[in-house]
Image 1 (cartoon, rainbow, N blue to C red):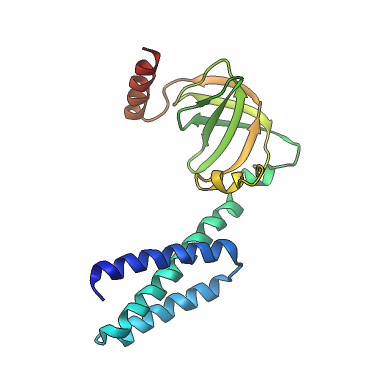
Image 2: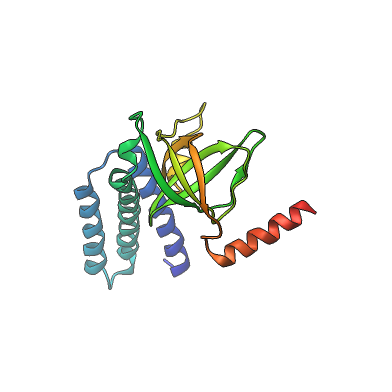
Length: 195
């Protein structure tokens, strides 16, 4: 099989592995077994090109499944998830990590808490917050709910957001705490939108 086709079909096998891990509860030892079987198959048939492709496809499939499982495991080790749906008010400090999404009566803020925690905050329309604002939040955390036929929880999980806070108390601590280059780019964008 030509290298270009092998690469294409390996990508397809990787995606199928992700889908399989998403829809079926396959234990990690089975994924590891498939990974080692793929490696063994490649080693065994290295000189016989007819069977070599099957080893690469099995390897890509197993890597896709393991990748999906590794991402799902991040949810369980997230420190904020344990406060979801408890009704307990949580005090957090974080930085607006993306440009806010403005709605008619609200704004959605993606807040980066610490190094690798993110939450989605639904806040009032005013005052407007910007990328890089450091905020102190006091509010309850919820698990994102799926909407009518739409996997909203999965949509947020792709951005590693596992908690939502709706209309918490917000205190602006400091401005311009984000990446300076991104702040300049968002500033240009906002300037052109206002013209």
